[in-house]
Amino acid sequence: MADRLAIARAMREMATLLEVAGQEPFRARAYARGAEALERLDADLGRLVEDRRLTEISGIGPGLAGMIAELYRTGRSEVLEEQRRRVPPLAQALHGIPRLGLAKIAALQDALGVETVEDLEAACKAGRVRAVKGMGEKTERVILEHIRRRREPEARHALLPEALAAAQTMRAHLRGAPGAQEVEVAGDLRRLTESVDSLSLVVASDSQVDTMNDTRQAPATGLPVSVSVVPRAAYATTLLRATGSAAHVQHLERLARRRGVPLEGQSEAEIYRRLGLPFIPPELREDEGEVEAAMTGALPTDLVTEADIRGFVHCHTVYSDGRHTVAQMAKAADALGMEYLTITDHSRSAAYAGGLSVDRLEAQWEEIARVQETVAVRLLRGTESDILADGGLDYPDAVLERLDVIIASIHRRHRMDASQMTQRLVRAMELPVFKIWGHALGRLILSRPPVECRVEEVLDAVAASRAAVEINGDPKRLDLAPRWLRAARERGIRFVVSTDAHAVAELANLRYGVAMARRGWIGRNEVLNTLPADAFVRAVAPVTRA
Image 1 (cartoon, one colour):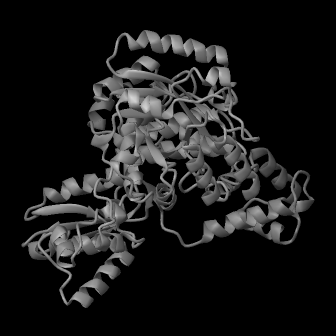
Image 2 (tube, rainbow, N blue to C red; image 1 turned 45 degrees about the vertical axis):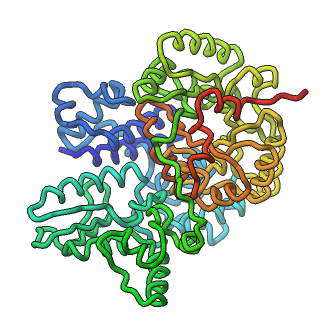
Image 3 (cartoon, one colour; image 1 turned 180 degrees about the vertical axis):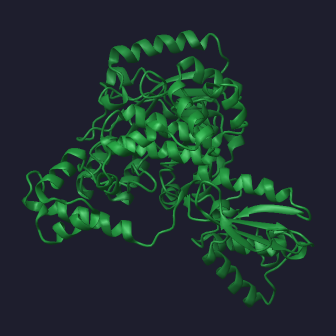
């Protein structure tokens, strides 16, 4: 029998194996989204399995339900084991190298007789790979760099949903322990960093707890866990120190020494107050100017919260690569009390994601109008338009001007050099219809680095165009990163906090987008979707050439 998070990990492995095989990208995404749905699940998984109600989970169809039930009951999955047999270990080890799919790996194995990573590494160093048709010296360099990175001593990392689910499970367990008075998650996770390599919890107790100062692994995640049990009087100080960052705490220690006060108090707010500072939210504690800003009164006091957001932005449906209909997404947004929902399916060039032709886009508009009659939430017509290689957008102006919302994003040709990518982005931003820059630098956390470009120059172009920057809440993206959000904020750029939801359950991505916004010091008045619907549309509506 496997638990919920172990099953989610198995489903992520299945998604990766399908990606390595280079086939059925929609199926791979379905497994990945199914894993995310399980990580967020609050209901009793065992009861859902026994009652045959797994398909009631948003994002879980009959096929995924069968795999989940098999894993839950037996701890194994025939379909996963079959896929493992189909994908050679060498291909799995090389997953993530651009343009090195199964066919090329098979060619390397046939030509060079390599079976292991060590064999391939030796062949690269000997210059034998470049002699294989379709390969070259650059291929050798890329393979060697990939192997080097794999060998770096690096703890397992988890994305926010998986880490939060594990931490909350442990927190609930500790709160039920005899003698536990308060329990809080600390460490990187409390600061909501993009990924974490360990979990930390602090327990206040004036009596011994069975987990006292223990370190163990979180079930299913493989992350090491530190549990610190301290007397109630030391709880706030321990929580502050355990939350970090280390550089932030060291800065506070230096300030405490200069002021001649101890770094302690009955609450974190009291500790900061003794130092002459306002409370600094955990998300800002990176020693990146927040202490100095707090000392001068420049620290934002109105950081955006989930409650400030009035509209779900950047949502996909079954028209492209989403899993739910316009009506299902609309009813979910309605039930969550949102004022508006943007329907922004992929544009026509995104054939891999079911991008919409103009005819299908117009058909979607008709469906949006029909659904609008059944819900209170306002439905906005939009698109996630590809930014093409030349900087153009994917529909003619005559189509774009009929939309309420245009999110412009890069989905292909990520590997341009910095000059080419900068020119591509700046050209796009000079278009009057360019209003929201979607998942700006195209990163996939733990798997794909950001595109190379002169970011400051691009942000200058965004500011000049008066466009907004999306803060993408997809836990795999969380783009832009906080350092660039602060740079954008300094230029007066405004933001949209989005979900990039491809299913009803992914509307919960708003939480992660808000977390990134807060880490970027962004206040509620700097976020456009804190505005009422009419004001939001006025702020982002495309402006076509006169």
